[in-house]
Image 1: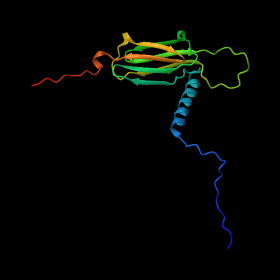
Image 2: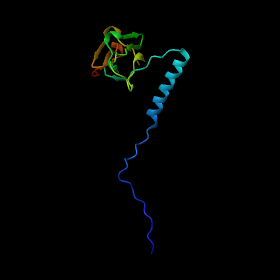
Image 3: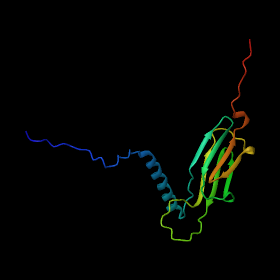
Image 4: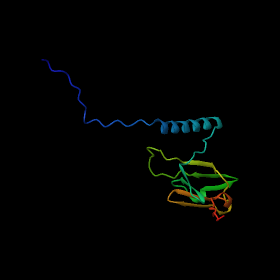
Length: 152
């Protein structure tokens, strides 16, 4: 009886990377938006830094990645319920030839509308190791309040 061909798996090949389309679509959409905006305005549009927003019982904590930025180059404002973070990461002077660039420079802007009233008088912002942390306290009337139940 003749030998039948067999299919063997190549054990030296790397396992296939799982395709995850949504992060790539989001990135593509952001890049296309920047390209369209810069083409229409004739100048480079501000970019948006990576941001995490956490909600605690008494405040929102906003953390923005701003590597290499100086605190004098950042402006944080609260307009009604909208938090606005603007600034610029300046190009640094280089000694050698820049062979590859993936870090962003230039103007940036981040805007977010808070879901309820904030206490603008007690907002605190700190810049530490390239991370801007903004603590936006909730207004007293929006904080949860425990109601004691009395006997009838």
